[in-house]
Structure formats: structure tokens, C-alpha cells
Image (cartoon, rainbow, N blue to C red):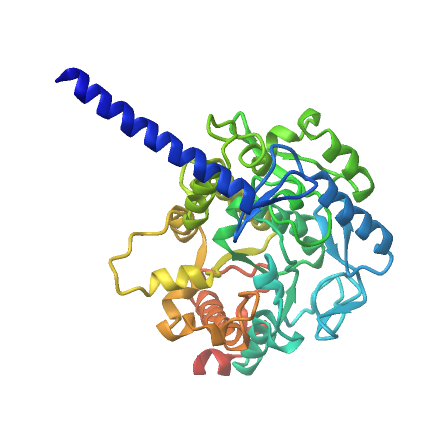
Length: 420
């Protein structure tokens, strides 16, 4: 009896092994492998164990060849920035002489009777895919002025910025314009940018740049890759990446190219793993206690402390993605998002604007979003309306300090306060 059971078990094991071997052969025959060793089958791609040097070389050389006319240019402190006095998006995205989005230039010192607000963040703050007069920063200024509050809003947002870059842009450029209020456009997805040094290892599209990267070393926030490596030095790094001092701090190299798994040699098992990984829309990097998550809190705290030292007020404005809103408005029981710890921390520590609490379920429809899933004009208008109301209430209550003024009547006439 035991021999019969053992024989049947061996037959099953052999049948399963044979099936897996045949599937492995089928997958290898059906897929393709490029010059960098990346394997592709249908909609799934498997990175080679090595950095894709050939692909990256084309991006780096392409930028270097066109850097004199590029709108997004190398910046030694933030990684990249906008070229001053230029336009993009077919002329609808204007960059002023100081290098931030605006159709006008500003004096370094703010007017004595005008509240100056500066906003920082990524493309959701910069306003990618909408015109100059459609961004929430522009509309915030207009809403405050229409409410009788003399205010101007300076938009320092830059596409693809991480939280650390937004903080550094404040230090390098924004602080010199002496704003009274600083608004940080919090995009929780950027937690994964906190642990990234080389943009191309996180997203293959876009210009070839490295970025500064904060790290928590002995519980202290340390800045790495500052000044950032110029594009002309990137290929030397990519060609010998594992030997570079920054390699241990590039999460998207360690997790993607260096992950040693016993089944990695199998195309079949690797495809299954990749499919499961792509299905997970909230990876561990967003979770409390993760390196990206802890860095998120530390960067926001450092940003806020520096703003307060400069005599300005700090406000966190949550800018949720479409996927986040879909979960928020789902009729199904919804657990808190894994990045919720960051929202709670911001709410408990600073002036916090929960944009999603002011939205309606209809705003998850694609018609309110651009093809690249940025906010469309109606969403920008709503964010501006919410922010204007919150900022006004914060000033009227005295919760938002404006030490440059003896009182708010200097920029907020009595009739505006009365009507408000």
C-alpha cells in the first residue's frame, strides 16, 4: 500500500514538474529579450539582473546633446529645475525669470500690504497638463483677492520632485522670496521617491538626472548626492553601478536588480511574481516603519522647522491621486490607506488641509483628470477653493501667524473680515 501511495505521489510530482518545464519553455519561446537583458511577454517585463546600460545611455546622451534648449535642466542642488524665461506645454506653461511657474516676475521682498504665499511640491502643484491660469496656485491667489485679501501666490512646484526636493527647493530658492505662508503639496505616492537617487531606475521616462537623497543615519537626517552628479558623469556610474557609493541608497536598484531569489532564473516564476507585484498598489515602501515612510515624516518635519525658523507659517495640503480617491469613495468597507500614518502625522503636527474631504464621488471620473492622470481644470479649481477657505479661516482665527504684519488688517481689510 505504501509503495502504491509513493508511486502515485512520484507520478504527480513528475507530472507537475513536466508541466512547469513545458510552460517555462513556452514562456521563453513566446517572449523577447532586448540588448539589456530585459525579458518581455505580453504586458509584463522582467528586468535583467543588471542596470539597463544601453537604454540609459540613449537617454543620457540625448539630454546632453539637447541640454542647451531643454526646458527641464540640470540643477546641482535639487537634481533638475525649470529653465528661467522659457515655456512648455505648447506655450501654456510659463516659467519666469527666477525659474518658477508664473507669467510675471516678483521682487525678492514681498509688498508691505500683500500676503505672500509660496507653494512647493511635484507636478500636482506645478500644474502639469493645465494652463497658467488654471493651476490651483493661480486660482488660490485669485480666490483670496476676490475675497478682499491682498495676496500673491508663488508656485515653486516641479514635476517628478520628491518630498526632499520640494524641501531643498524651499531652501535654495523659495526662502529668498520671504513668503508669509508656505504650502507643501503632499502627494503620498512620493514616498517611493524618498528612497530614489537615480530617476531612471524608478521611472524610465524623462530626462536623465540624479537627485539628492535624504537618509536617516543614526536617527539623523543626512543629505546624500549633494551637489548632485551632473548628467555627463552618469554613464560612468551606470556602467559600474554596484561599485558606486550611492548604490546601497538606491532602493529601486536594490529591490529590482539586486533582489536574489532562488527562482529568479525561471521566466515563468518571475512573471508570476511580477504580475502579483504590479497588482499590489500599496507596496511596503508606503507603510509606517518603512524607510520611505520614516523619511517622509522626517523630511516634512525638517521642512516645517526650517519654514518656522524663517518666520513663515507651514501648511500641508493633501493632493490625492485618482486611485486614492477611488478607494476613499468606495462603497466597500475600506481600510485606511497604508500611507495614512503620514496624513495623521501632518494633521496632528501642522495646519493640514484634507482635500479629499471636500470632494464628491463624481470626481473620480476620468473626465476630471488629464490623460497622464493629473488634475484637470475643475479639480484645480476645487483645490483652490478649499485652500482659500482654509487659509482665510486660519488667518482669522490667529492659528496662522503672519509676523511681518502687526495685524491682518494690513492685507485683509476690515470689510473683508466682516464679510468672511
